[in-house]
Image (cartoon, rainbow, N blue to C red; front, top):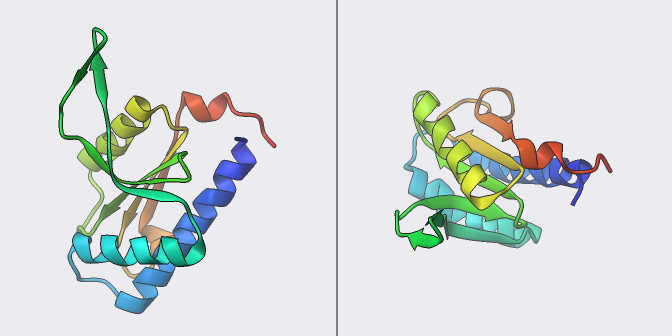
Length: 136
């Protein structure tokens, strides 16, 4: 996996989110966008895992914390969906935690409660795993 490939997948994910948002608009529950995005990913051929369990290992023991990422896409990008007035620091902490525990290089928060996902409804994060990847 390279930085370029991760960025290509990110672009594809955002395109799928925009398609769902164009069809449904703002103002629905997160669960509605989640189900529709699953269908969009299938339609677009993006490999994804919905409600991906995020394991926590402590002293070589797996601790059950019931953490679940909304999506793990192409086994490389954590995607968290929101339908909120504003993305808060707790939402950012959530995606950063999932990225670290899953050892994934990129995370995206998409807020469907906005006018334009591309301009104001998304926030992307990278970490040390991304920085270690080759450029292309």
